[in-house]
Image 1 (tube, helix red, strand yellow):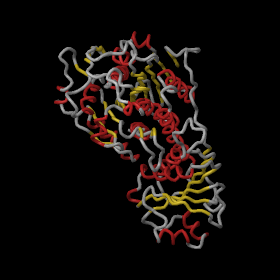
Image 2 (spheres, helix red, strand yellow; image 1 turned 45 degrees about the vertical axis):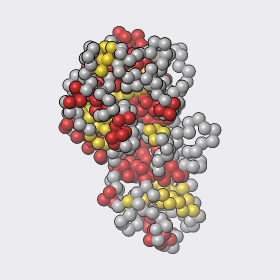
Image 3 (cartoon, helix red, strand yellow; image 1 turned 45 degrees about the horizontal axis):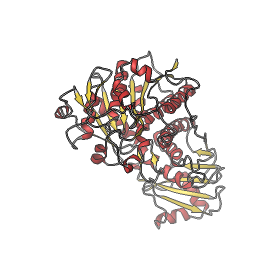
Image 4 (tube, rainbow, N blue to C red; image 1 turned 180 degrees about the horizontal axis):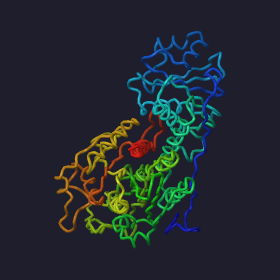
Length: 508
């Protein structure tokens, strides 16, 4: 079933969804010396003798590789990239060596970033083919992460530049089993989908066009999809989400996507994403500097969509549903005001103290809808608070929960794929800070302190006591400047964590 209330054929959607150029990815069947590629990425461990591929290259160049490593001209520390040019005795004419660090510290996060860094350097010019050779006997999880990283590193944020800074490879050759190639591709494409959506400007990705992207994924992977527009949202009593959308000419949407790889219809896992496609702050207007990156305020919803695409591509034996609350927060003549009292879907009333604390209001109704499906576990993701960035920095996502065992499971999945997260407390005293004198709660706490936690405490009111973990991705979802493994802009953070959560749950 695919239903679209508010997104009918012929509706005012000005931009067709942009589709990523498909990269051909195959298993390399030759040695590193004979690889049919323009360039080779060669992974090097810091504390072991050269592996099979590196040893073959070293022999072909009369021990030069080993000599350069010993002289520290080639770095083997994690994510350090060293290009070699003009090598004789091999078909590819360029080799990029990338350090993987010591084997004991090599996890999927290091593999993802390191090979991504090498791919990013090679992608500065167009290349028909690139081959990746890693050390011997790496487990599939590391090979898979490295492949996903290579797909991420060669794709930039320059969607509308005439002269591109990044050029995705025409073909990627990987020395890995076919099943690992397939799973690595699924992860890489999921991460890149999320990155592209976050990098699109707000005049291209707004609630209706984001919903069109959801429909595209649903059609490609044969998923059930439903989208509620303004009329349906009103009938469904989603007053909190609708209030945020009132200042915008763009039609609000609640997009729902259901992957049913397990038994029955009840989702084992519900993923809920904040999708504020542009956040001006509303009447609590942001300064210009604070608005520049607010196209990225829909990264939570984009992360849910990227993860669901990967889960469907992997055909995991589990039921997973995604709920994406999509609005613009603008200052139009009917914009919601400070002091307004909103009624959410579950009847909880919310006094507005700051219209720039809008993401939690969008999530409130989305969480209610998700909880009504009675999933075993829930995870919401949002670029929710600057307070979380102050607490944890730009690379670490914050976890908050009403179920410690479930939070531990989410944190373990994040560790397994090498994405940094840290749990913040949910003490009862923070509930007192969101109490209102005129409504049940208000949408901000008392002053500046503990803002990430008071926001999570508000969200907790809408999960109907179901097992739930909130992930604040305000720091890692968007990079203000280039990283070693990724251009600035959307990073796709936590997509791989969500997929790993689904994998672990499917095995439970």
